Amino acid sequence: MSWIHGLPAATVDAVRVAAGAAEVADGIAPLSGHVLEALGSDQYILATRSGTQVLGLAVSHDDDPVELFVTPEHRRQGLGTELLHAALDRAGAVWAHGDLAPARALAARLGLVRSRELLQMRRPLSRSWAAAQVAASALPAGVRLRTFVPGRDEEQFLGVNARAFDWHPEQGRLDLAGLRAEMAQEWFDPDGFFLAVDEHDTVLGFHWTKVHRDGAVPLGEIYVLGVDPAAVRNGERVRGLGTPLTAAGLAYLAERSATAMLYVEGDNLPARNLYRRLGFEVFTTDVVYRRAAAT
Image (tube, rainbow, N blue to C red; front, side, top):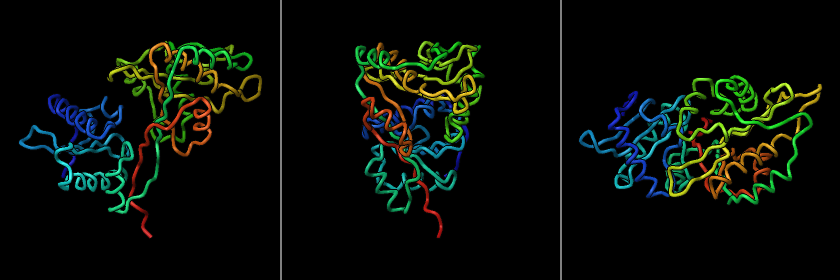
């Protein structure tokens, strides 16, 4: 198997159809949202029959773990194992969305180890509940919330994001080109992008929301929530921004969706505890598998 760069539009459409079939069979999408949005521009191994029918796919996006799937009717024929070996040889790691039993079994058979867990958490939303969260939260003195202004706030936001997520393998590398690509998506709405600012309009933290409208009903997401670890006011570190930022975003989402979701790292206990206090429960788990270290 060899890697290729880019896919023609007709093949991208065929891949979307194949990924949709896998999602119906498994109950979870085989490719993450940002990979689907970038289909056609990454590195791929594409398994096809007669040049058109998609049997399986491996996608290498930036330096991330590879994402791969095999269509339901072509499983248990060795194709998944072949794609998996090629993915591990290229990137050293793969995503297993949904932590499904067949993926766990294949990982165990090949001696792979879990190196990362990404939890999707959800809770029901109502306007009254969200309004109560806003009423119960308070901003620190001298801090107010406003929404993102395209063409003005990009650089400040990127600086806060970089400091807040310097540890994160994906979010921490967001740059201006990546931000502009996100802002060009149909789902982007600056009215759902909240900034905490001081009296000098310095950005101290943010809550970027997203509404998914590709399903049967809209699904609201706490897309990114971050606070600048270097935020200070009058020489003292600013604290207490997370709760009011979260509440503002949930109130926005409650006007547009009956359910809220978010992603959080499995080992980020402070964030998980915050979301549990707000009533969020684990809905699915995505896992990164790697080859075991040599001994």
